Image (tube, rainbow, N blue to C red; front, side):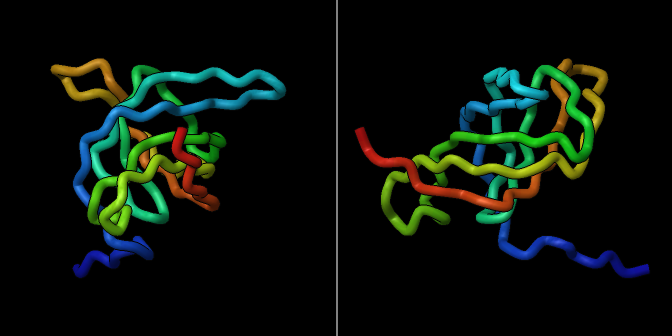
Length: 109
C-alpha cells in the first residue's frame, strides 16, 4: 500500500531552540522547545509537556538557511497541533507536529 504525502512544502531537518507559546482561555504560557524539522507550513518539535491535537500554538524560531533564502531570519508562526507522539522509553519529551496558518518575519533588533 502506497503512503500519500500530505505535506504542502518541503521539510528541512533543523534542530533549533524555539520558544512556544501555549494559549488557554486568556492565559499564555511560554515554554522552551527544540525543533526536529521545519517547513514554511509546519514543524515537528519536542516539548516537555503533552498537548492535544487542535491546540493553538505560537512558535518563535530562527529559520534554517534553506528556508531563509540566505539571510538570518527569526519568524513567529501561529498554528495548531495536528499530532502528538508519546515520549520514547529513554526520553521525557513529547513529539509535537504542528501546522502553521500564519508566519511573519520578526524585525531585527
